[in-house]
Length: 633
Image (cartoon, rainbow, N blue to C red; front, side):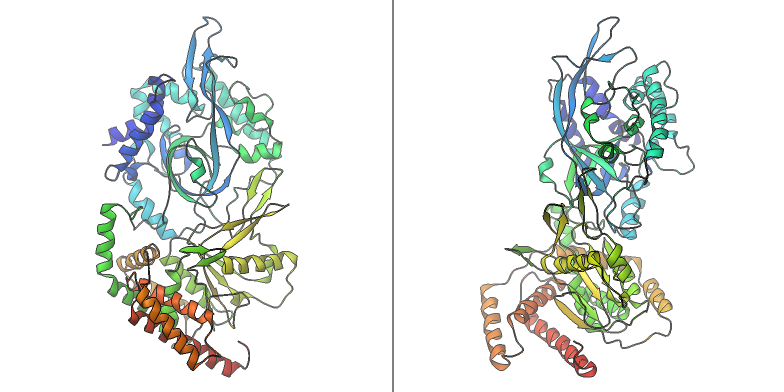
């Protein structure tokens, strides 16, 4: 019920108020939330920062955020327990500092910095951004269904006033909570008879103006991809932070903190008792990055956080649970018609080329499943050559892929982009942060590199480095982040598709020469009609199909392994010149993804023969193209 939901949103301050510092209230809070969020559709009414603008959300309420860890700041110390004293009466009160940014202190109270009761604890701060390149359909499915069930006090209705959460009836019913909210936040209007937070608010707004002239250039939210929107957040983690790493995709549930006093960066007059004194030791540049205005970069104090296996909202979050197994087995039982329809859809998209469509399916379900020493196993970068130059065809292929996968990016490989874009993240030691780059992407993102855009021109030093970075990403599935004095290797799992006119300048696992069977007179019209012809329900099946098959296990029996080895020896006998170890490796990869694409988790003799047949057709095309164009390939 909305009443219960609203109670849950405000329950952390209640827990904090009712428990003494030596009790195990923290575990109770976490357990309570874990149980509540397990309930049927419970997560649907928790408002999401991905979708609801921060000023529509109630401070100190429970929110969720789906994000990628872009950077990890140094651990910070905070007052886990502190004591305030009333100088007039000498009355002392113990407070908790957990799940808060600003120490709570009444109008007549001061923090006793020398109290023997003070407990200093540690928490970790992650700088998190929305998942780079997340598809519009993921947002629509995730949030449009969710927000209908968000409780009235936090629902996002654009016609409401910016500060409408203050009019919430819950506050009217609990004036004491109103006081607590204002004291914890300083972000209210009138705080009847509570002078301190009111003063904090005026300080904060003054500070906000003060820092404006110094913010040139304006605060960079450090999104990896150009043109991205959505909030960045400082996510404060209290436990098990060593289980998370940079570029992990997380779903976090926690307490929203948007205290304006956090925005005071360069205001010398700020009240040092309100902010942790340890915060004041950084450089101005570091302060600006690590303490940005909370209206731009809200804080979330994490109660629950988990790594996401995948980004597809149409799939159960965890596939190991019993209910999820039913979902998987039901879907697998109708896999064959879904594959056939997807093949037809992609064949139309690729202008009637069914062989290229087969390889595109294999590419889209490929994933790095293991690493042997430095070699990533399972990567399947496809170079789709023969694409018309200066045509909207490559953009159209990308738009189709965008409709199918949860996260993607189209990199236009122009001389301008190669020479001026930042591909590799680098460490800025002055601001003590990792400055993002285009190749800082979440696992299983589809990266479409459009080489048909490449024109005559000179690559400068940066351009050469960027091309090299793309080559490393494709070959080794890693990006070497620039830490000035050394490079740090970050392994990744990115599906790279290269569209090019001739053979790509970049390495690939497999080159497929496009052979269009139809040339539509109006490409734009053709594309649009193709997309509108697919029913949303069918499109959703395609999306589930591609995400699910990536997550399946796969094995080859000893018997089939032996048969494949014998077959390979036989092939070498017949054609020792053209059959190499690379050919065997690629054919095994094709066989792997061909099996998985049919829902089979082990290799059969039939699938092995079909993989050989596909490879023979693909090679024949390349040979034919070679004869037509001379030695271009």
